[in-house]
Image (cartoon, rainbow, N blue to C red; front, side, top):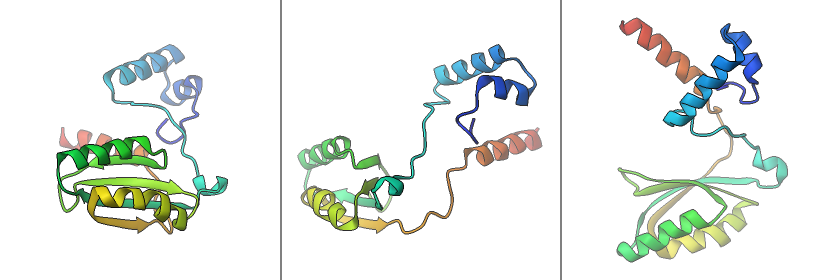
Length: 148
C-alpha cells in the first residue's frame, strides 16, 4: 500500500502469501494503533489550474493574541494545505497552493504579514523526489534485521 494505495486486500494477500482476512485485520489494527493515519490520494494540483506551490516559514509577531490569530488563520485558509510548529530558525512552516504567485502573494501572504515577522517564502519550481514511504519502510526492515 505504501507504493500504491489502490492495492486491494486481495492483491496484498497474494503479494504477502496470506489471506484477505489477515490483510484486512492487520490493516484495521494498524489504523487503530494510529500507525496508518489515513489512506489518501496525491493530487497534481497544477493539472487543475493551481500552479503556485510554496513553503513558508516565520515567527509570530508581537504576542500570544497574534499567535492565536495566526494559527486560526493557518487552520482556516484552504490554500494552506499543511502547517506545523517547529523548533529552530522559524516558529512555524506551512505549505500553500494557489492559482499563481501573484494571487498567492496578494491573498495569502498579505494576510499573514501582519501576524508574523520574518516571513520567508520559497516557491517550488520542480519536485526532485516524490514521497517514498516504501523505501523508508524497507530501510527500517533491513536495519531491524541487521541489528539483531
